[in-house]
Length: 354
Image (cartoon, rainbow, N blue to C red; front, side):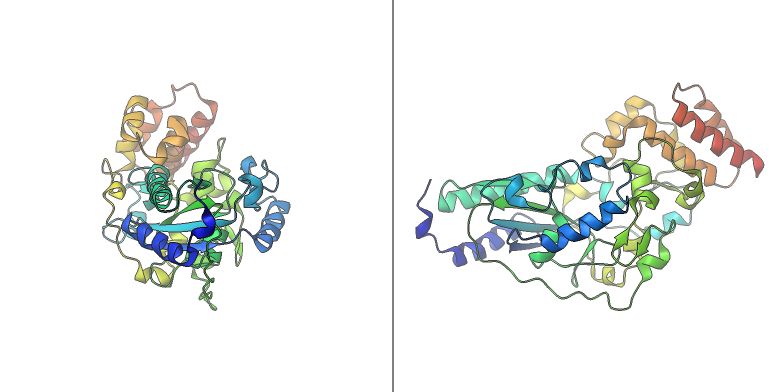
């Protein structure tokens, strides 16, 4: 290992931010590992059961809020931001067309985990070329890491009332990544919060999941219901889901700060297979092999084919009645999956009743 006592860490921090921007990160910040405030917030959130079936939020002890327990020797966290908003007409128009499928905009292109992790690895290699061997590990929403709390401490933005990170110059349409390191780099100051009295995100949530400012009950959240929840979607939320078949962006779409968001220049995040404008019937007709082929390299694949069909069945049940929809739903009754069958039957009942 290179003698790190000879390193000018202030200069190195400036270089890291420059190298990061050269790799496509719109913002790079550095923070320490003190997450006591975030730990208290997480403990209170878990105590209320707001994590639902996301057992991974509890399964790592304090490693999530104490980075040096996850990766011994960690002194600093280099936090990065990469914009992902695709160039497109206002996506809220899709929500007004019940025959179309709405997919959260982050999932339309290539899996962001791979994109950001590769760039973080290249950033680490660039640092290593400058200072010699050092301790580090890259994370992108793939380990017990408090990514939003770390990004907030590193000055990348503030956590809004919807619990997403917000930036004055970019809104919230961005991914986050982290590089844990043993380099004693100078840290950045957090930015001030700018939500003020606005509560547009709270008011717009279709299922009332934002139960109080900065408090999201995941059990009510459409993103949780369509992505994380493995079993049946509670009937009380199905109508409110509308045509959202993978995630929900409502709280971001109404946020005033997203007026300043700019479309991403990353070709990896360009929508694939027409998923930004596909119809529910077209997607419901996919075979399992078509699902696997067309979601290869996509974050969508993690929910699997049956959950994909479950979500679309709910959306079809919410669509205006049509013979084509009834026929499509009936064709899926032969699948040997009790959860899927229950959702298809629910959708058929709504279609026939109307």
